[in-house]
Length: 382
Image (cartoon, rainbow, N blue to C red; front, side, top):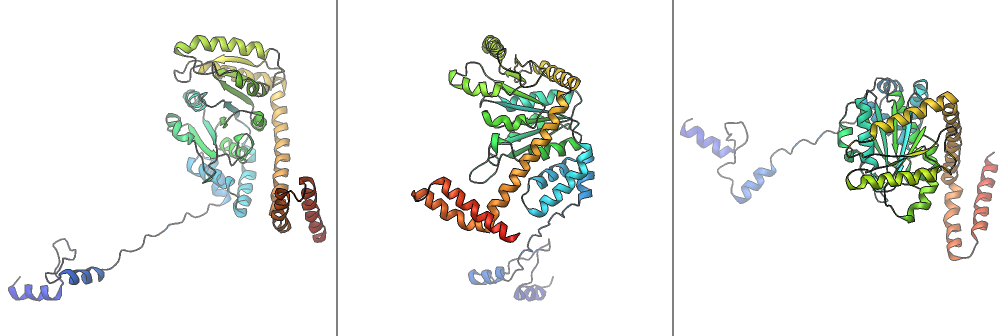
């Protein structure tokens, strides 16, 4: 480049680097540089690519093919409260109905610290290695701030989450009774249609509310600990009337002998209780989920349970009763949703709440007034 050409390029501010990027002109001082930068073209805004909503056929075929991504999307669909999503979800479930009901559904509950996630990971991994496909519905408590899951069960079952024959779906409980998300039943159907033959449902805690769990699984398992204290005995009794087996976990090291003692105590107590399942004797067992001891024994117990109850017909009677209970639960949920969404209820309820809080009106009178206002409105519409 000649001296004259170089001078012209410097004056025009068009000097370019060897890589093709603009070079700061030699004449650009403080203010000049600012003007030069501002004159540069701003970066192009990032494009937001929205995923196209799948059709019913795409959901159905994807789930039946065992596509984990589409299965996860289908579960998100049934969990949605948007009316258009609810309608689409029901169409998907109706198409998949002939392909459900072929799994063994196992509920796992226990006191905090009993090692539910550790047990499920060890148990689920064992089943996967045996050739089964395992779906874990780990129902987390719901955050009161965000509405999302708190415990993060998927991160606490890392080995099982990586297994190609396992599928883990943590869901916030949404404050549902017993810590079971109101869409857990639909999620079980989707997992069964996707070919998972063992469904494990981990619940939040223990209490009489676990009736909800009992109403959706075939086999109900309680994980217990040794030396939990007498203060839990009342709670344990309520649960023990519902479960098909009790497993004293963490039976390893110095705790092994204590676990056997607790096993004998539980069995003595269970002898006087009515079994949760007709024709089946509920017993206590020991295991160490950490070491994998007793896991295979527990699976044999469940297999025996399934064979025994299918032979007697109790297994199928329970499934039919669960379908009936599910129907009634959905009717109640629908009526409750319609009631509180009604404009007259939305308008009247806050005033009645204030009257009750201030003591100006008894609760029974406020409830009667609200229901009568709702019924008058509904009667006028008819």
